[in-house]
Length: 320
Image (cartoon, rainbow, N blue to C red; front, top):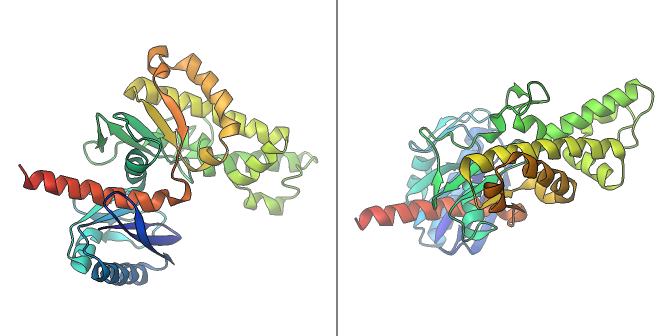
């Protein structure tokens, strides 16, 4: 059996699973302060290990982190998690080797092993959630880079100036993330209110802070031209960012999660038009752009995939 631990800013999920990824049991609880949350993670993993023979533990968590040392290094959504030796803690709790991976890489492994990337040797997974990150499967293995920072696609500058994302104006994340789309919506809504013609999906200044990418998507799907314009902007920048990735990595598939999965209809046509103009035709011709297949369960499968990858590496090393 494998044990997966998905650590998020609002909740944590622990799952036990068969080696083929089939999930047997799941425990979910709210993330609170670091001490309380770590104590709960350790006690619950210990209980799950007592119920089954655990061969490996996989941990999926937002960065920054040091996967080699097994430490979580102060992620912005986990205040107080400073140099937390999470793999050592969970190995002590379960008696099994534990492995740590950032969430974008873990989700890439999950879609590759269990989702829309099955059968690929070269695949890119884009989170397209609150932020924009990428996981790279190249030549049949996860590529992490010299110090684990490969795949920070959200930091690419798409335009000279533009929405702020990942600490940079005009970044891929600034245009193509849940946060980025929400910020575009807030700017347009505020301008409309200022000009005395508020939008039906944001009628006053008090409503601006409540705008999310979902708010804008629902308005766009209901025919609102201002909301459609926002998604048109994001779709164009998505096509441009994907064209860069296609030219650089020549993938068979690019799999996109979260916002894209929910609102593919608002992106597809414009995104493909930009790719056809910007990417190398031979590379674009062999690359399929697909929504993530694992849906809301991707975090569970991601942590399990990290455990499976770590176990496979251990077995390979033992058999040398």
